[in-house]
Amino acid sequence: MNAVTVSTDDIERARTEVGRVFCPHRLTPQLGVHRVQLRMTARRLGGIGIIDLDYGQAVRIRPAALETFYLVQVPLRGSTVVRHGGHTVASTPALASVLSPDDASDMHWSEGSPHRIFYADRHAVDRELARLLGSPVDAPVRFDVGMSTNTSAAKAWLRGVDFFADELSQAAGGCLLDHPQVAGRFEQGLLSQLLLTHRHSYSDLLARPAHLDSPGRLARRACALIRDHHDEALTVADVAEALGVSVRALQDCFRREMQTTPTAYLRACRLDAVHRALSVADPRESVTTIAVRHGFTHLGRFAGEYRNRFGESPSTTLRR
Image (cartoon, rainbow, N blue to C red):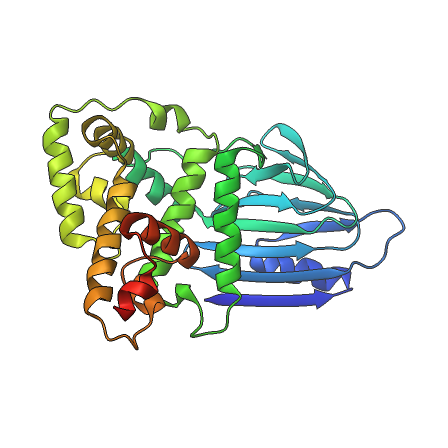
């Protein structure tokens, strides 16, 4: 895990340190302002990262094309005018801005406008999109610049971003993301949800109905694969890739054939496995350890789902 924390009032140092995390850029405070109040914490794991950034003062930021990464910038307060790819948005806590790699940007941050920024490596985004489509990506993804944060899907994605940020801030050894398989699931989940939530140049292709010759056979093969490998670092995208179909095709197949989703089926298999493990475990063993071992990282949600499925808490099963 790469982590950087910077605090400075010096404009030149602020430009240099932020440039090291992102890319070279021009940083200009508003007229008459000679110092900033930069506070930055940046953490990166794998192909994604979280940067909490506040200049304190009103500033203008002009990076060239990002080239190798995407940014989703969410003002926590204040506002930012973002010009990018021929579009201009007035970004607020209700409207994030999304920067794609191939265009320069010109941004005016207001005074008192701290941002939480989601960083995504370009290759990681391309890889996840190819998994969703079931075929290679032949051109870069270009996101719409403005992203509403008020939709239910966007709120769910942002909750995932916040949870990821909280885990990254934990001390070594006390973070769920210390395990590479868990970290990989988070990366895939956040990237795929972003690609499915916010409009981009491949959205219409992702939404196109899947045409399958034998959906029943595909569903049976998918269920068997999930049952055999649910205890591994398995995602729905992994299942689709193994079966040679897109994630959307697999989702459509499960809805038509089983009236559920691949994600729900995978979670049910994992819940059953946790129940079996708890039933035979030493009562001194930790519920958390067993749950994480089977792929559950949001423990509050896990406990609720477990109770709904088995009519008791995980700790009750463990003590029996």
